[in-house]
Length: 91
View 1 (cartoon, rainbow, N blue to C red):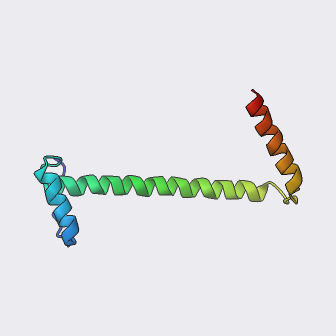
View 2: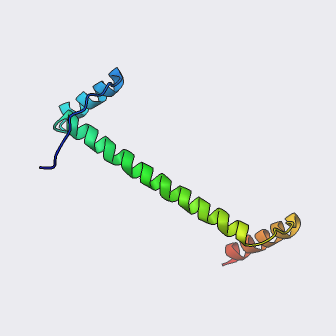
View 3: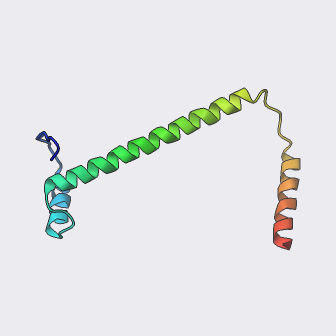
């Protein structure tokens, strides 16, 4: 078994009740299992956010490196959108 370290944490009564309920229903065998599962989910969420931030930074750099922006012609964009929609509806 991996080396473990015991920690003492303070939780709100709502979290304590949630943990006890998860154990009582058999979803988890112990408080430690609940906390480990929550920490795994937290870690995955952090990793997913980091990937999203890196993607956003890359997209920002790509946009900045793509050159000077051009003014948008709103009516032309609307016309092209309507044409594309009509083509899809006709298909």
